[in-house]
Length: 274
Image (cartoon, rainbow, N blue to C red; front, side, top):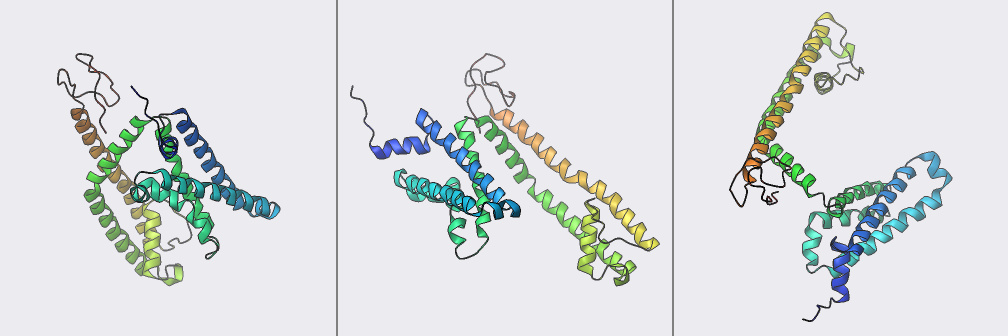
């Protein structure tokens, strides 16, 4: 039996896109280290005292990483069997956006800080460390949020109506003399108060205004529990559904725990489900 010989392009693809080989794992780990290092450089460069002390060094470091990631992106396009499919994929778009801001900065000063998006590329660590179960859990959470989206939209619409009503009432009660110069500004106060943030930049001064503010604050504490309950209920339902999907291929028993690897009845290894 003859051993299959890989072309240089196929070997490059195996290293850059794969994690099954030692070189592929080393490449991804080195890439993650480079991404984190470039983000540290970007964050440090936003500190005025450090930027003024080491301006040239920071620029050289930033452009070194940009050129490195540009070469990496070109290599990905070169060795990919379907370059257009890679460009349209999630990681393809993120990889491109990780280098574009540096070149756009020539036309729009300050846009280089958008390079912070490179941090999203660290998600590749899930592939490197084989953390498929973490991705499975995140998929369950996303499905729960998607199922609860109508209820959440209705909830936020109700909150929007409430803050508009309370803001308008506060504008009528307090008026411009006490800082409530317009209904939009009063609505801003209502949002800040109902979310229990309370910046304190606008406060009521009259007795009726304080009474309305007290009611808004109490209502805010009640409202905060609503979206939590909606998402929790959907998450519980999704987990029950997912347990039902984990069915033993030998005895057809379902209802296994999320992290179960073997059937609780016959001991057969369970199939992976996402």
